Length: 308
Image (cartoon, rainbow, N blue to C red; front, top):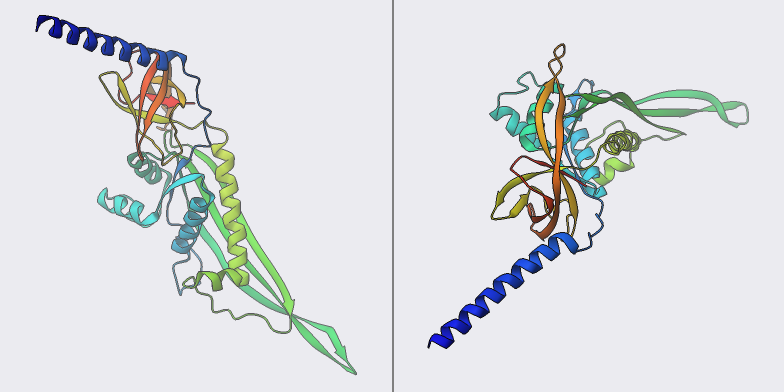
């Protein structure tokens, strides 16, 4: 019996030592897996409608279209306006109906997004003019109708961490057509496929594409980042998972944020000093969080920032 117990203890110790060795080897010797393109978190707020269209809320429709196109691109995790509106009501923000940079920052921080997109739709519709003599038969001319659809949006892109407006611009989409028979002015967002075929629909798409290009340009200037959720028994829990594209083997640098620096004149955050404390590697990926272990360094804690 004593020999059996001794043998069992030897086996257990061997397994423990082997497990510790394999963990250490994984942490320090495994080749990093290249990072795939990681999705970025964006909040798209309702655009304020300052058009005289009247039949539908153009601002809501624009926000929905922008959200759809961003999700379809596969590059973003987008918080829909319905969820944003619910949080704004809960937090009693934006009670005037207009989204401000301060509102966007507060809601964005609550949801953990990097950028907030909002703005004002100032033009939406089409106008028609007539040119005479374009077609002639015998001694009289037939006038041609010329129509121009125009959509204009004053868009703002705000970095939620600092509250800084990264981009403020007026984007314009136009579509022109000349002919004897032009489309009706009765436009509706209800039928997406039908709307896309209209002149205003095509002009709207051009404006939306410009907004996405501006968002891409801003995100390309800043690296992807996430945060440590908690640390337990040597396992480091990371905020994101397969939802943003993380895979087992990805390696990240970890930074401990210092004191936040506030602009004394504007009252906005200028960021904070950061101290690199180590490197971690992903060992398990769930949908919305991942597990990692340290490759180097120590002192990892909840709230630490991770970057490629």
